[in-house]
Amino acid sequence: MGVTDLARAGVFYDAVFAALGVNRVMEHPMGLAYGRAFPEFWASAPQNHQPATPGNGAHVCFAAPHRDAVDLFHARGLAAGGDDAGTPGFRPEYAPGYYAAFLRDPDGNKIEVMTWVKADANGS
Image (cartoon, rainbow, N blue to C red; front, side, top):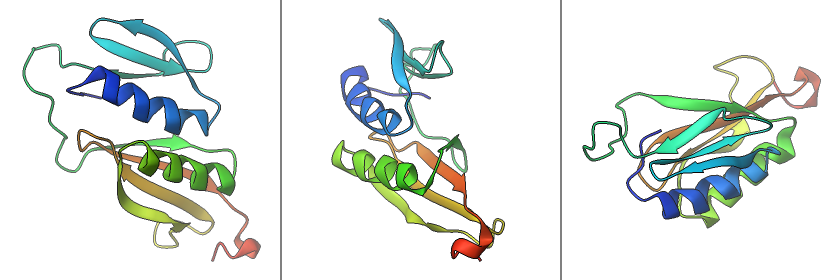
């Protein structure tokens, strides 16, 4: 994910990934890596040294273990400088039991977090 300020991105991604049990596992002058045991996601300056810009229509989705983690991911993201792009809730238009939230990171990149909830638990 292209970012313009690694320190600012680190504050945001440290906060949201902690809600999923994911940590910063590596740092380089050009980027920060997150994962459980090895790099699974990078927030970094673009390799071509051009300004980072969000992709039109692009977003990354992360799996959460339960609804509370989705809610926490969203709340921590807002508190760490992200913008709301879709409050936590069911998305029956995607699939029954699909519970998700959307944020824009401080650079405007769209990220989603989701989990599956049994349909009989208000998951439509």
